[in-house]
Length: 150
Image 1 (cartoon, rainbow, N blue to C red):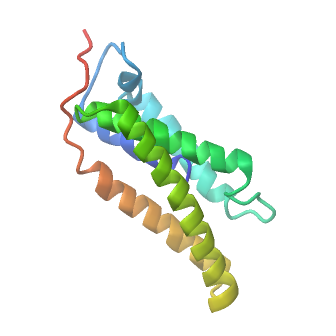
Image 2: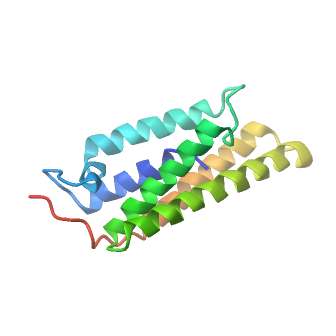
């Protein structure tokens, strides 16, 4: 539903679960407090930016591609953290992002245009769902596959 919420939540989870002083692997950088803070600020900016009129649809090519890339990256990193296959996680994350983007785009449009709910209300509910569901997902992470940093 949002491009940067998942990376921000994943980063916060890793900071609290797998503190790493000397990053050597890509996932180590995600487990750094400055990375978690930067991703949180970017995610907040994205959420606020969504409320501005005339923002392109999430299904326009640049936004859609960014969501798929974000999902694939998070899926690969999450799979690696849990000791599973990063390529499989990347495919699952990318597909999940594509399906979620399209499903929630059409759901929001239906709620706005057919049901008649005010768009700001639907947008806030969508944000709450994205953050709440994302938080539930990252809290189930069982790190076991992160390569150690020296």
